[in-house]
Length: 163
Image 1 (cartoon, rainbow, N blue to C red):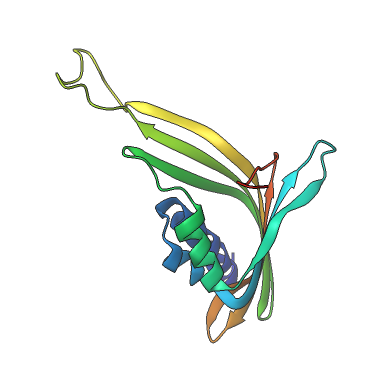
Image 2 (spheres, helix red, strand yellow; image 1 turned 120 degrees about the horizontal axis):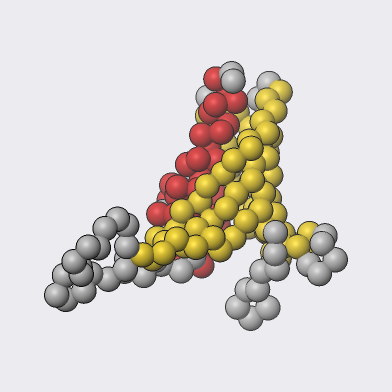
């Protein structure tokens, strides 16, 4: 894999980590000021339909991450994984398409009297809650890859408050 391909893949890695950490500043910094982000969800017919209005620009991504993603509860986290990265680089433009799964992590609360005798290993649950594809266009600007178009293609319907 070329250095550019690796850098493009790392942008997606930084994106999912920032989402898991609810770090809007880090996530927004990955986008250009005129980037567009659109979420699509599969409907009953199997085709993708846009959900809500697109976000425009890194500051909007930051705002959305900080204000529309629910904070993790105590003992909770999310964990995005991506796989099967298809990367194309053509000069200062690149495209990445990757599958993703998001897991909900919930740690079990330690009992007041301590863990029962014989308890061993991780305590809690890991549950898959979302899956789909990230379909992303990037540009190399001033020596750094930035996201210019980001499409989140969810495998199932998505309901937003008030929609």
